[in-house]
Length: 232
Ligand code: C5P
Image 1 (tube, rainbow, N blue to C red):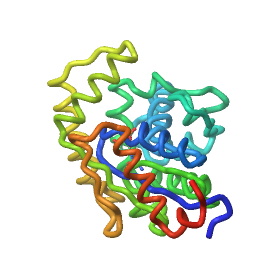
Image 2: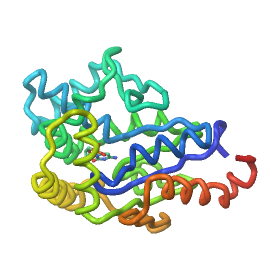
Image 3: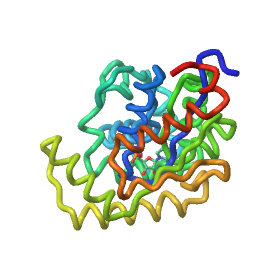
């Protein structure tokens, strides 16, 4: 048993709602939540700002190592990642950043750096960590694993709503095309591709509202040995 509770790994494709679900599950359990996608996005954003090539693995790792990474906690979307003390949120949703993050996530050095940071952040437990390879690679020994899925169309519709809510531009057809391409890139890459861990619970949220998905994961937690020990 880890000192602060278990590790809950939530993996799944782009736009499936992992960050929101992760944050809400963490809130219900008194756990912290970590969006590993935000880490790749933050590094991609910094590389774009500094004009560093998105294919230069060595320079990207050097850049990542030179930054002071913070993982601010809190219930809102501003919680997540800070670089050199600056909280990052809206800039990470930009399309150029999404595209760049998926590109740099293919690189071996970048992945090694990120996985090391993610393991260090979650090793004591009491954490909901979401991404693409948490249950398969970062925490293959996570006590509870969930693979969250939804149709590309449902995910595109949700992303469109989120962007509009943030006051950003949103075009459904473009988003759908982008999601399909990002799925192919994330599942097709050689290192740590997106895939369901054999022992992960599969949840299809195409027709499920967010609260039901959260309830389902909290239920899985309660039925797990760790959940039975803690009275949530
Ligand atoms: O989850 P999100 O869409 O914010 O992730 C941005 C990108 O970071 C993804 O498209 C994916 O390529 C990459 N990523 C990854 N491994 C993770 C989390 C995200 O490769 N654990």
